[in-house]
Image (cartoon, rainbow, N blue to C red; front, side, top):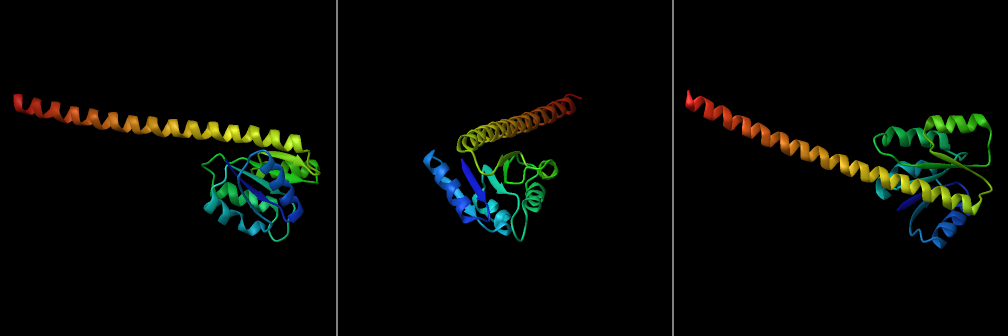
Length: 161
């Protein structure tokens, strides 16, 4: 599973990369420039994003809104990382599309458990999407077969008359 880390503090990025790497997460991409998130999502197609809320240039709220507008049809869990735990920020981030929160300073065990849980949820969503697509293909194929059978019956009916 692929994880994108977005934090303007290189030390926080390094901490998360080390923590995740130690747990066997090898498909990691990170940036300290929030303006690159959509571009990196297109290139990397992450399964989960760890997103700092307060960054220069483009804050986490704007990034959340951009991601939700760009990827509204896909379940992409986004964990917001913040030292600001006030209720207004939480509500605003949730309204903008955050899936979960982690407070700084980060608790390593909590970080890993939340990531594991949301990646499992993402995996289940992908399985359901694949199953739905397979069912739609099956319905389409059956519909085509029925239309062909109906056309054949019409032809036989016309010939019999």
